[in-house]
Length: 416
Image (cartoon, rainbow, N blue to C red; front, side):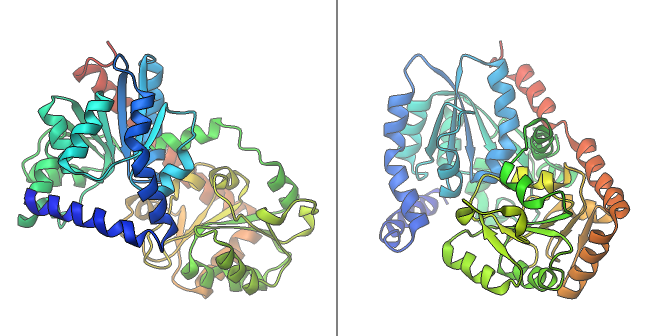
């Protein structure tokens, strides 16, 4: 299995280089990985002590960030290293002040694993949620480096738990400890022979709770909404557009609408704007305009959405109308607002729970979305009632970071 895995990694690496000529996102990753070892060599000295966290992309980074912040506070002499696999994480966070070094994770060959660990020499390794890289993890185990997987979730049909996934299972079981989001994931690991596991919950609850303490003011959003009832459509895809565009067109003037698409390429933004009948202003074109005069604001940029949710009276979170995957419902939930999503949410336990509690409404078509939005736009009392459910749900589920830090203090010498 190891041989097949290694061959597969080399094939993928070889294929991506020519493909990158035709795909800008892949090109960013190919170019960025060429710089990884140079960045590490210039940023980490032989006397530095380090903590390394790996994230697939931006969402996993946000999950791990509360843990890193706590570790920075308790281990001020350690450098914090973060690696990303995806350009959508690296390109957004490469200049962040929250950590010391940000790099692309090199492809998981044995040679790269050795070189990476020789340069970083971490006292602790954190992987967030998923992305198990066997060569790196097994090499870390050989070196007796303490490794943790946090905010993990598992399903019984995953490759780790099937005959063909033995090498991946070996890598998964190399973690010193795994913190799962739920009891079901813990039981799957135990049933498969892994015992060093505990349920901490999802660190995203701690992350979004921090958002309440941040300064969420955005002057151009203040000007746009002009104290009107506001609906935010966040992280939307074409399947979501099909649901909400008819409602907006039928309810111009009854609320202010902010659309924050997942894809912000100009041609896609053009296609959305061409479907809308109200007055539309884009972030990229707002300079010099009186924003309060517009009905619809298209946020064709990144980095604002979590704060924009603080202005929402109602949030529609995208991804579940189609098959792309539901985006983060906790970001709006922490602000105590009702949330609407599409129908494909089975893989998202927090969505299931909030639907059962009543804080989220799931819709299957344009008509259902329209009915739910109409009632919520017209009833402040209902918005407050449903929003309180969301807010309480967040409050009840925070605390994962404390549990993870307690483990680190007890079982490693990192904070001593």
